[in-house]
Length: 156
Image 1 (cartoon, one colour):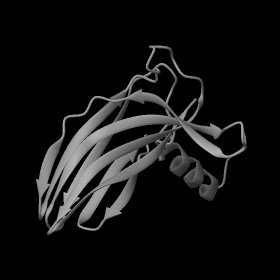
Image 2: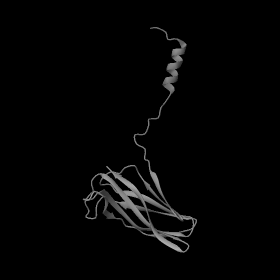
Image 3: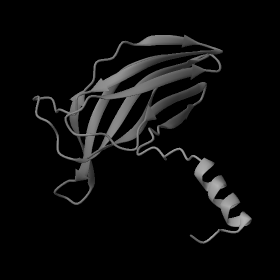
């Protein structure tokens, strides 16, 4: 049997002692979609895509820098498309259950919205991109206005 040079034996010994950690097959990534308001912001956290038939949960945080912000007043899932006249159109898919709260200046509060990927009739919607639209009321001094924040939910 031939003898290996000392350098080759050392290289084999080092290679045998090295261990590697396998890369994860899937890493959960989320994105925070911020909407700036005159007196704060709304942050909706979403994933890159969701499975049909699953329940989507989207954390929503409201931050008030002055005055107060009340929300979510409403949360809707909309489908976008083109109407017969060729103009963009949005169709209501589902109203989501919300429990509004008021956030005072300098504070943050969060809630989670849930959608079971079904329309108002209980039918699972087809794979597509859907808009999640959240309404809040911004009270900043003498003015009070209703504003919207939104994010796109990709169903596959």
